[in-house]
Length: 65
Image (tube, rainbow, N blue to C red):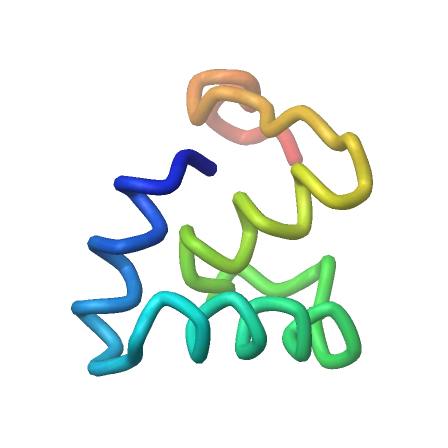
């Protein structure tokens, strides 16, 4: 996630950029890989940290999961 994108998410959460970066790192401890409820910014951070690539939404066809 780029610096500008991080600033936007930090503003949305009412945090400074430094607070937001610390908060993101804390999410590593609580992230639920099976949840569809994960916020996009946290999912992007986890993907970057672990080197995961996120599949595009059309990856799964209707009726498959």
